[in-house]
Amino acid sequence: MPDYQKQNVQWFPGHMAKTRRQIQESLKVVDGVVEIVDARVPRSSSNPELSALIGKKPRIVILNKYDMADSKATKIWLDYYKKRGVYAFGADCRSGRGLQQFQSVCRTALAGVIKKNENKGMKTKPLRLMVVGIPNTGKSSFINRMAGKSKAEVANKAGVTRHNQWFSVGDSIELLDTPGVLWPKFDDSEVGDKLAFIGSVKAEVTDSETLACRLLDVIITTHPEMIKERYKLDFADFSGCGGYETLLLIGSKRGFLIKGGEIDLLRSAQTVCDEFKGGKLGKITLELP
Image (cartoon, rainbow, N blue to C red):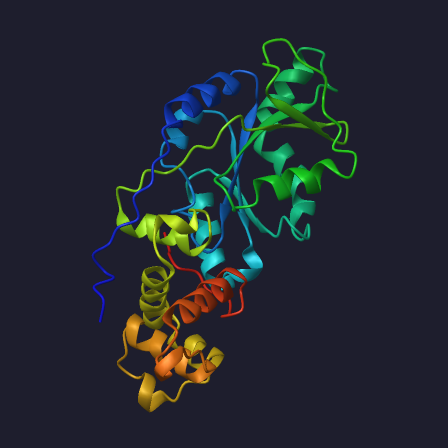
């Protein structure tokens, strides 16, 4: 059995310092921040530095892909954010489900900004929000869905660089697409794993077999019945298995064989990883607050 548990996902792009500076500059011209996280791994898909960067500006968290997450776990996360004064809701940015809440949540979260504008005689001034999110959490899907088919880019504003992309949401909101990607640091090996599970980290960072074994280790602990049902595993054979043994069982059950009758572990691993990312294993949340 390969020692897949000792390998760590290590990936920290060199452009992080530049991205941090760009975001700090952009924060000067926005009223608040919209953060897109993956509802299956809300903590791992969020950058821990973001709160410090944002400061006192209002923050809205959208738990995207909530249809793939455990609904009870999502409620726990929403309660967690609420207790910390962060406005949050679940949505599916690709289909648009849940996003009808966005404008009303914005008005609530930025009530102080709206009041301030009214006192200055600028009642119709649009609210400006910067959208942040790591790859594959749905930032682009969110902007495309909210901006509509036209994706009308707002004209250059004073203090805003030419590289920043502004999009209108009706007449009352303007969204700023983040100039860069603020990645989490993978100090905790589990964070790297979870980002690889959801497809945010490039596949070549770690091999599929290692990733699938680790993913199965996690799901066997939290949702063993989903693995058993999806791959039609006999409980007697499956009971007590770790990720590697389960991957072998899945390969055997699916008939993934190579010459000599050996299990095609690569094909089995790719199947498990793809089916998790596609939500085919069931509604699974891999972490709680």
